[in-house]
Amino acid sequence: MGERLVNHYEFYTAFTSDEEFRLLRDGKPLGSLPVSRPLSKGQRIIFGGRRWQVQDVDLEAKVIVVTPARGGEPPQFDGLSAQVHDRVRLEMRQVLMETTPSPLLDTQAQALLQEARDIFQAMGLGTKSITGSSSVSHVLTWQGDSTNDALALLLRHVGIQCENNGLSLEIALGEQDSKKALQTVGRLDITDPSPILDEIENMVTEKWDWALPRQLLMKSYASSHLDLQRAIEVARELGDPA
Image 1 (cartoon, rainbow, N blue to C red):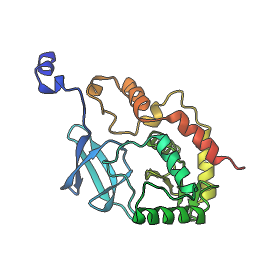
Image 2: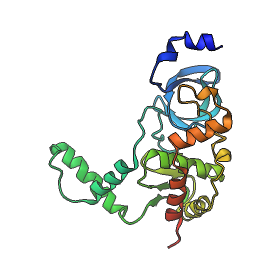
Image 3: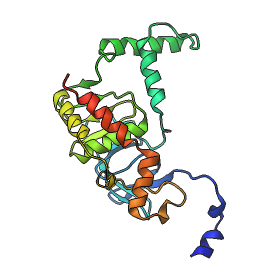
């Protein structure tokens, strides 16, 4: 086995690329999709401009079995986006709160920025983080993907349907119930992250991850892709009744 490994060209590569998964519906291929974000059964993804729900994941065959998902706008998860840092999202919020035109933008871009600022102010997003309807809430954490991915996983861990749409989390509850769900997450003990990560199907992301025991693989994935502690802190802040 060692001889096969060292004689293969991949043994000397320094970088890894996102795994490509084939999408199947009723046994028929839809296409392929590189996946870098946490993937679990029941999750909704977008492919070909449509929303799909993950029914099963075969890691060895690199296959995702999906069925059409109903309702609403498709989420922004497409497997192609680079990870966004916390600082970037905080800077986005700061730009939206300002009123001074940016000297770096042309006329059309200035108009788009002003439209975004007007909507931001009209929705009162400078002072609140949760908006939506009686059945769906959009939670703007203004945190990076490692925190938002972790928070979405924690919410699903306590039985709440939640998707990370990038800028916001979409929770299948009204505002008050969403706050209660966040309060529940804020009380979680993550000393052992294994139960939270157990549903993630694609934790093998680095070159030698396949060789790790599952418990060590979970710790490695959590340290490199998720900020569970910050997610707990954000849940406490957003779920605060005050």
